[in-house]
Amino acid sequence: MNLSNLQPAEGSTHNQNKRLGRGEGSGKGGTASRGHKGAKSRSGYSKKIGFEGGQMPLQRRVPKFGFTNINRKDYEGVNLDTLQLLVDNGIVTNAVDMTVYVANRLATKNEIVKILGRGELKAKLTVTAHKFTATAKAAIEAAGGEAVIL
Image (cartoon, rainbow, N blue to C red; front, side, top):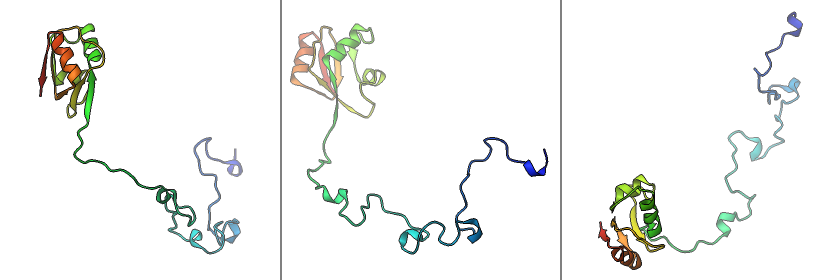
C-alpha cells in the first residue's frame, strides 16, 4: 500500500455522481445538464402537483357533486350475534356497556354505538347503548334482557 492506491473503505462512500456546475473542465459545467433557457433551467423551479403541461388537469376535469351533511351522526354498529359471541366466550355475563365495547374493540370511547339486529341473542343481558334498532330491542327483550338507552 502506498499513497497512489489509497481509497475509502468499501461501503463508506455513497455519492458516485459527477458534480454539476463546477467548471467546464469537469464536463458538467455551463448549463449543468439543464439545457438552454426556460423555467426548468432556473434555480427554484418546481412543477405543480397534477400539472399536465397546460392541458386541463384531471382534478379540474372531473365534476364535483353531492354534499356532506355536517350534522350527520355516524353510529358504530354492534350486532346481536357479536354480543352472543361475547357471552359464549365468557367475556360478559349479565351487562354490556361502553367499557365492554371499548375493551373488546367494538367501538372507541368517543364513538356512539347502535345495536343492530343481525343474528340471535339467547342470553339475558342488560345492554346499554346510544341507539337500538326495533328488531334488536325486541330480540333483547324477548331473551329476557333489557335495552338501556344512554
